Image (cartoon, rainbow, N blue to C red; front, top):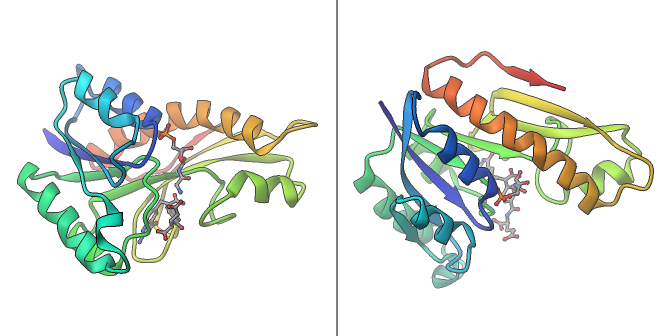
Length: 196
Ligand code: NHR
Ligand code: GAR
């Protein structure tokens, strides 16, 4: 049974979907939900589901990414995770952290990578006049949003879309794709999932 730590920054809707999927017949189980933000709404949701939670506030480490990441590692490693799943985690990770969890870390990113690495993906897709958008689950490497792709889901862009309406449509697909991709990754299968 693989042990999964989930890293969040916000509401944690993807985290909740991952946890719900790990109830029952599954090759993994959740052991920790960690946030870099003490007011992340997902923390209370994780605690209500009986999962251990932790906070490492990056604001306590102004300008010291290495110190922040050492504190993250100290909070995570006692739980002995086999897999780290980033789910709306909003801090860029340096090669120190990525190297510590090499080939054990995955992320969901709200664009059809390799398009739109980084932030504000929906606004950038609309700005470009794209007729489709989506999300990608990928392995985390030192290069931002650049690791091997484990799955993608596509949605149409509709007339009158705003970043908010588009992100809501993409989020529905994130909630389908991420549990499927984690399940497959935990079973050792890295073949990509394509939805939509
Ligand atoms: N780290 C590495 N090395 N590789 C990846 O693929 C990563 C990563 C860390 C986070 C998630 C991510 C995304 O899916 C992710 C993937 C935050 C930023 C960012 O610019 C960019 C991408 C992602 C997460 N963060 C700012 C920073 O200075 C802070 C922004 C904020 O707090 O709102 O860290 O796109
Ligand atoms: C999701 O849309 C996720 O793809 C995105 O943040 C949202 C988190 O929602 N991630 C990023 O933008 C990473 N840079 P959630 O907290 O409800 O899962």
